[in-house]
Image (cartoon, rainbow, N blue to C red; front, side, top):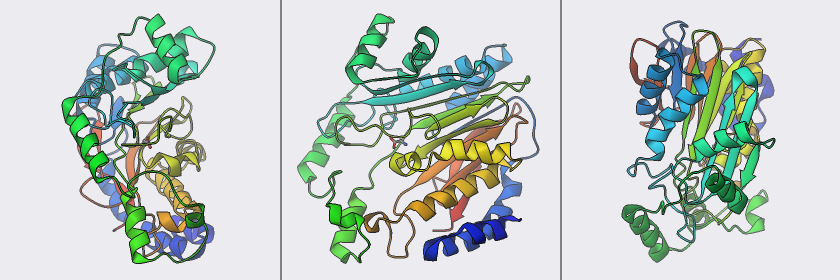
Length: 359
Ligand code: GLY
């Protein structure tokens, strides 16, 4: 079954039908732009990850482990106060506290570790690796995660920069409908007034995050995702980034997928797992990403999450690589941000992502 027939047969309702037409045309058109043919090693990352892909490639070139390489890569962005979506300088929650989520997966050992709602530690990805290496657990959250991080020798510091504090203060000053409380009635099928639509759209705030995945010459696969999550979220909100199968999934026999964008949509579909499972069936990274994105579109039915044209009112992106070194970025929408970082062993640059919808 080709992509067009598959998507058509799996599409549900109007939104699905629109998506299938567009994905069929654009996926094929974009495929040639994404990959020049597989080669190893390769590192892919989200658009904010060029420094990470460079660092990871250098470390793999020096014989370092794939997971150590991608963690060292994202550590650069976690420590960068200019990136408001990750680590130090990340935007805080509703109460002005920066809460971080991260997960790591190490393909060769099938190892995994994650932390969620971690406060005061610049490099949650390193703590996630410590959870993987030094405990029999895979996910620690909140105060327990912080206690563990301190016990492992991580230093505690204030992660809220003056710039992030000012952005948070402005959000507080302007505060109206731009929070994460919703009226249960908004989940029911009904038409919303333009005013209600506008208010709902204000909820779609900044979802940053960095994901970075690598495959070395031996075909060993690892990945990491790290984030400060949704800006001004309810305290304790955990996104997709620390959840295996959602913000990150690695299978050393197949490849890796990570995600940025609206975590709630991704969590309800386990999209990274889905992408890797499609690849296991022999589907290319780009095709696998488009199919998973299509699934998310089909499952997005709440009126407050839909635009007037019935398409999702949020952004979502995947970064995908298979064991052979084929890779793709896949976005829900085309746009200036529909790019991803790739180091293919020859050059390190941003490339265009495939996408489901033109706009
Ligand atoms: N994808 C990042 C988040 O939703 O927290």
